Length: 267
Image (cartoon, rainbow, N blue to C red; front, side, top):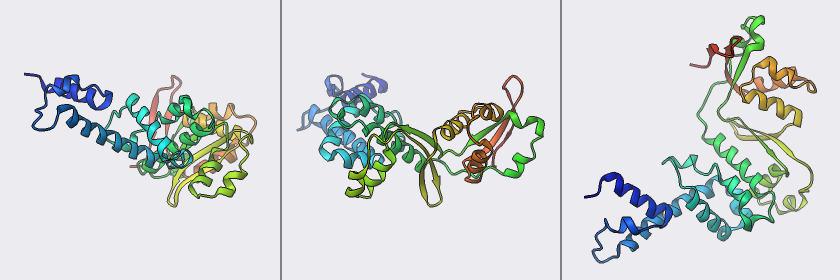
């Protein structure tokens, strides 16, 4: 008698790896071959995940067409089965997959658009959080302000792309052929900030230096160190803009050994 774990592993190999050998032994045919029964589950599995990818990457779906997308999705799913039942979390490695996917080689911008769409999807599904209380931040002793580590809003993310993927993304979703045709793919890299607002997800461009400054803050770099790394921008203005836009929800104070000794976040 097989254990439950053995049966689950056999079914996993059947559904995710298309290997029916073990699972078929545990299925009673009853008028339908075990392999045919397993194929029904496998097709449902692949169809569900393909739909999840299509909903997360709608611009990619429109750019390559349904047939190409479904074929690419099937190959991706076989190599990257989900690790969670929460399908909003599925697809994080799809942009990297597209970058290495040989049939998409001619569409060099495709993986960049996918990275932007993943950041947008993560922003849409990020938990709600209240913006940092600036009065509490201002109350920090002046001697400790360089030791502040800002805690970002869960919806905030940065995307860097070689191509103007934000323009491509907007034009494709708007079905604006004129705008899509007018895009210059060689216009240079796009340094993007993604954030969920009450009105929806906002995607905006930053200058390279401003983007890198924000990246150091999002990485948990102490405030003074982040400022010291950005000598070529007006960090006071950049920081004030981020705080006013609610891109941070709390802060921590670290000691000389970089250990957190105080934390301020919304209740």
